[in-house]
Amino acid sequence: MAKYISNKKIESSKSNDIKNLKDIGKAIWNLISLVYNTNWNSLNADKQSNLLRRKISAKFTLKVQLL
Image 1: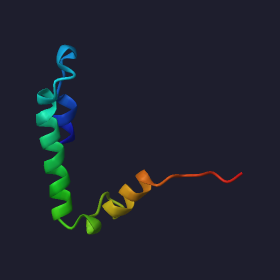
Image 2: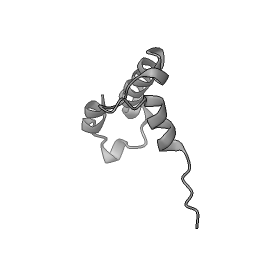
Image 3: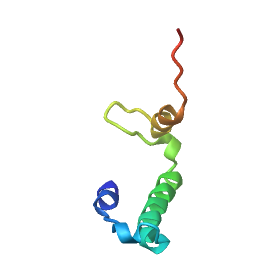
Image 4: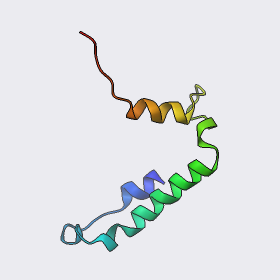
């Protein structure tokens, strides 16, 4: 899925054309739906058995350094 999205090229002259992005949006939505419908909070995300839920939470949790 990531390879499909990264290989998708957008022509500069059509960058504001929403229809040009339709296929990418559809692919992303299908991926999100697949992950959600497969009980995403219990899926292993890597070889160390870290859960996908934990990795997503870590990615979007604000990290503040204490002085």
